[in-house]
Image 1 (cartoon, rainbow, N blue to C red):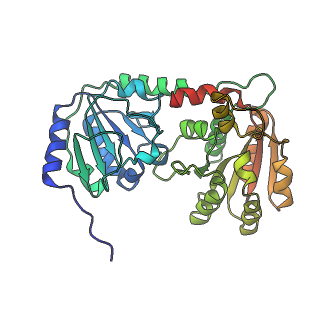
Image 2 (cartoon, rainbow, N blue to C red; image 1 turned 120 degrees about the horizontal axis):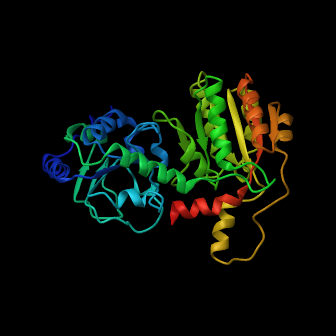
Image 3 (cartoon, rainbow, N blue to C red; image 1 turned 30 degrees about the vertical axis):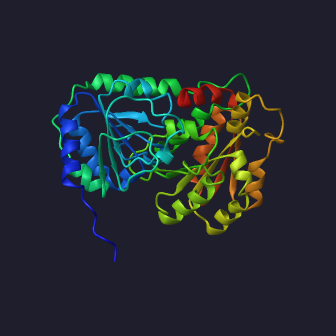
Length: 361
């Protein structure tokens, strides 16, 4: 028998409530543990009238289209401009494993709402509510703040602008950001609302930044353990769990090479799954990190793989795209397929370094 949810202790709740009453520019950071408490979090955020940042794993706990959405929190640089304005930070179910491993950047007091104490943590919380996250958020009350809607919108737009991949350079392939945005546009055109799975790699940054989540569980990601090869099996599981919605697996080419056999699994099961491969024949994220450390060349690239041919060999439908128009056409056809399909998107990795610098700083 599962134990009853544990409410916050009264002294801790009183301390947190006092901090909220004094704050004029609070900011909420929502993490993985807030997913089942999305309604309570949204109610509190709207009562506080403050911006909400979400971790990768918490995408959808507040919809990207919500006027209080401030962007994605990683512990890096992209969200710093907003958080430096805060006079109170409320962590709602955010585990330190979800953050970039860097020192905590902010002087504002922190309320830590979490299921259990985190050891070690980035900071000493001014108030800590440990127990059921949903119950704790529901107990907190607020009467507004000094944030203006246009300030939050400006911060959100600034965050997105700092992460843009921009157009591809010459004829080198498709912008990774365009892959994500065109994929979502094709879903909307087709009246589809698939779950999305993303594995580790440079492509995860445009996926998590520019895929517009609407509700908790819209985006599944291996952040924390950062496992490559996660997207395809997670996409298969999501499509099996909810065949009506189906799924899109956004995978890097390196990650897909680690689990090619799962393409045959997907074809055998006949799941409603579209696999989108960011194909640049390189471990782009590791290559960028290598460059920062002046390590020798080699070992991070391979001949361009024809993933479309591999998918066809496994019994699925496949397309190849070298430019935005071709990708949009391929994506529409893939979404119309009754079972598994794959779009081999030849992407331009040139914009990844600037985006990663903006994120991690």
